[in-house]
Amino acid sequence: MLHALDQPLRTLHRDPVDYPPLLALARWRREGKRGALLTVVGIEGTSPRPLGAHMAVSEAGDVCGYFSGGCLEGELSLVARAAIRYGSNVLHRYGRGSPYIDIRLPCGSGIDVYFDQSIPDDMLFEMEARQLRREPFVIETDLSAGGSRLVQLQAATLDRTGRTGEMFRNLVRPAVQVQVWGAGYGAVQLARLIAALGGHVELYATDGLTVGAAATFGLAADLISHDEPHLPAADPWTAAALCFHDHDRELPILRHVLGGPSFYVGAVGSKRVQAQRLEALQRQGFSPRQLARITGPAGHIRGARSATELAVGIYSQILETARAENLVT
Image (cartoon, rainbow, N blue to C red):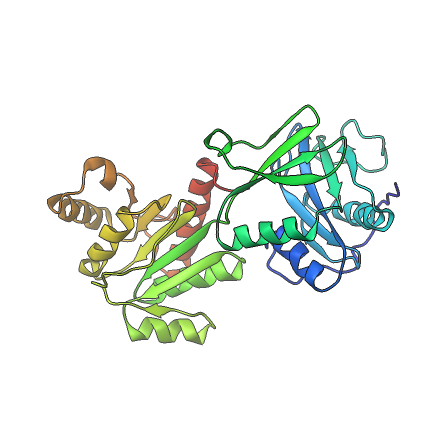
């Protein structure tokens, strides 16, 4: 199989940097382009991307996803297009232990990458549909015989991606998303930051000023009543961030969020406000275990004095929590 040193990427995808490669591959397939799904199936040492990470490459040279800081993507694009052209699935080692002595990873590690250009339409579109429905699923790939299939998701595999012999099982999780609840520019700036970085965000505002401010930046915001009985639901890959300065407004929303599976619940305010918040919820019957789910004051930047500091601090805390709980691929 061909390889190249410093091969330039002919075209880069125009989606957000962390756009799911499976969705890009499905879109290209609908446009009549063949493509390959690349998967990290082995890591020796450390790696910028985790086991099971994906890239997608089309026959036209479109690329979605990444495995390194730029030292490998040109090579991967060239090999993927050759695999598509020849109709063959291949497994390559890069870095430590690789036969390609002119391609090295600066970290000194080695990664195994599987190039699969044979995913059938029905399987690809089913994976696309599951990602859009925010349903986790498992791809099982036979690295020796070639070919992949979807397998039944079982409780024993919910947190497991790995290789057994020539079989690689990859758990594909829904993308982390953030529900931002609030009033004022802090909520808007947090939603702006997440959207600008290509993250999934939903903004729920309790006043028209916040809705208007969001629209100024091209963001959609749903106007809700603070005592709305039918607030939107969440799933285990959803974080909830409450950005209110009128803290009486947040209590109905906190009651709603604490009744769901959100992996992160953060609320802005001082330590004194956090104590008052917990006391009010305790009087309403919430247990210490439930109250312990609330991070307050939210954000890594203590004493934040601007909407930007607040946004950066909260989003970094959300991502750190998602990583600690093994919620990201």
